[in-house]
Length: 68
Image 1 (spheres, rainbow, N blue to C red):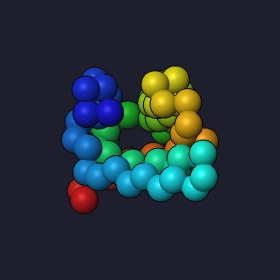
Image 2 (tube, helix red, strand yellow):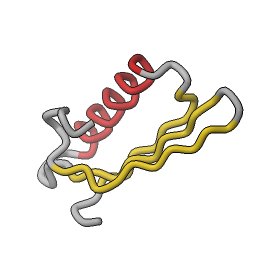
Image 3 (cartoon, one colour):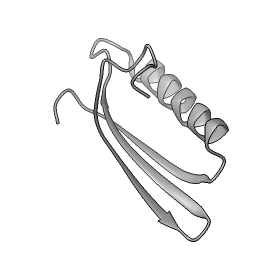
């Protein structure tokens, strides 16, 4: 996630495995000037890339924030 250009800073990542399924929660800093619709598009892209790279990820949550 840190390598993605839309992520300015990755604050933290939490994972939880429940049987074969994995939940990932990400708190990251994005460009604060982004319109909400663009931020949603970027987050959706991050989540799709995460599920492609890690098929066991069943749930993913991304919290945009400018501080930890």
